[in-house]
Amino acid sequence: MLTPAEKYRYARQLNLAAVGETGQEKLRNAKVLVIGCGGLGCPVLTYLAGSGTGTLGIVDHDTVDESNLHRQILFGTKDVGRKKADCAKEKLADQNPFICINAYPFALTAANARELISQYDIVVDGTDNFKTRYLINDACVLENKPLVYGAIYKFEGQVSVFNFNGGPTYRCLFPTEPDSGPDCREAGVLPVLPGIIGLFMTNEILKLILELDTLLTGKVMIYHALSNTTTFMNLDRLSSSNVLAIQAGIAGTGLCHYDNSGMEQIDELQFFELMKTDTVFLDVRESWEQPPVQCENLLQIPLDQIESRLGEIPAGKKIVVFCQSGGRSRIAIHLLAHVYGFNNLLNLEKGIHSFSSSL
Amino acid sequence: MPITVLFFGRLAELTQTHKVELQTTASSVRELETNILELFPTLQNQPYTLALNETITDRDKPIFDSARFAFLPPFAGG
Image 1: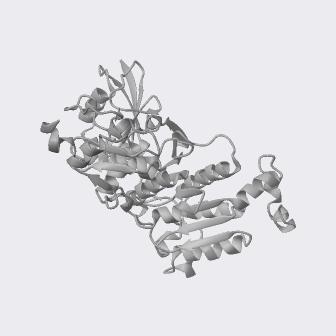
Image 2: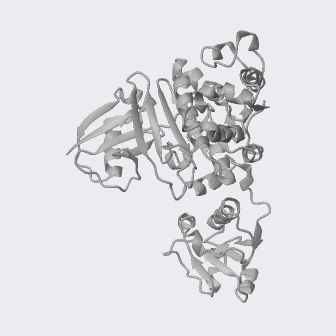
Image 3: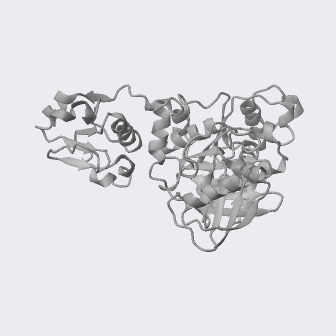
C-alpha cells in the first residue's frame, strides 16, 4: 500500500496504466546498485530517485573535481574535493526522502564485487574504465543479476541490458578486456551525451523494474549525437563468455574468486581408484584428442559446450573432471561450481598427459 | 559484389569515415576483414567486434551481396 504522501509525490506517473499503484510498489521494492557516479551515474541516480526506486546503492571511490561539474549534475562547486558517493547521497536524499540510499565511497574490486552486487536486484555500469566494466560483468554473471550497461566515446554512446534471463553478457559483445581506452578526460565530451545515454539506461532500468516491453536485451544500441542516429546490433550469448571470465580470474585480471585454492585435486592413482566406484568422469577435451579414456560413466563434453549441454551432467554425483594437462578441467570446475552450483567436483591435477603411456 | 562498411567511435576517426561502399570478392567475414584492414591499415591492433547485417558475427560466416558490415569498438567512457 502506498502512503498518501507517496500517492501525491508520484501522482503523475501513477496515472500511467503501465505504472499504477502496483508498479509504484515494484519501484519501491526495487534495489538498484549504480557503479560509477560520474557523467552516466548522475542522471541515472537522479531519475531513479525521482521515480521512487526504493533502494539505491552508489559505488564510487572518487572525489568531485571542478572539471566534473559541467556534466555531473549531482554536484555543486562547494562539493569539490568531497567523495562523490557521499555528496550524491545527500543530494538524492533531499530530492526524495522516501527512498533508502547507500553510499559506498570506495572502489569496486575483485574482492568486494560479488558481495556488493549480491545485495541488489539490478546493477548499473556507469564506470569509465574497462577493468571495472569486465569485473562488473563477471560478478553479475556469478550473482545472476541483470546488468544495465552504458558507455560513451566523444559523441557516441552504447546501451544494452546484459545477463537478463540467460541473454548475452558484456563478454558476448566484447569477449576480452582491451589494453585501455580513452576516458572522458582524454577523449573530451559534451555534457549532454552522458545525460542522454544515462537516461536511455534509466529507461531500461525502469522498464526492467516495471516489467514493461521491450527491453534492450540481446542487442546493443549505438547512439550518435551529431547525426541523431540510433543503430541496433543483435547479439547472441557467446558459448565461451563465462570461460573467458574464468580465464581472466585465473590470470589475476578478473574476479579473485577464481583462484584454485579449495579445489580438490587428484592424481593418477586416485583417478584409477575412482574408476572402480560409481564416480562420473567428465572429459572436457575435444573429441579428436588422444588418448581416449575408457571407463564406465564417461561423459565427453568439450569445455566450450559445457553450458549448452549442462543437462547431461548429473548434479549430486561425484564428478572427476579431466583434460590433457589439468588447465581446461580447472576452468570447467570453476564454471560448474561457481556459475551453476555443482559440488563434489575433483580435478585430475596434471591431466591425462602425465600418465597417458599407462592407458 | 557491393557491400557497405560502417565504422563507429574511434575507428571512424582512424579511417576518417563513418561509412564506405566497397566492391568485394571476399566470401567470408574473415576474408573481408583482412581486405578492409589492408585498405585501412590504421585499424590494425585496434580492439573491435564485427557485425554482419546488424548482428554480431564470428569470422566464419559467409558474405553475401549487399552485406552490411560494421566495426564496433568498445567504449570505456562514462
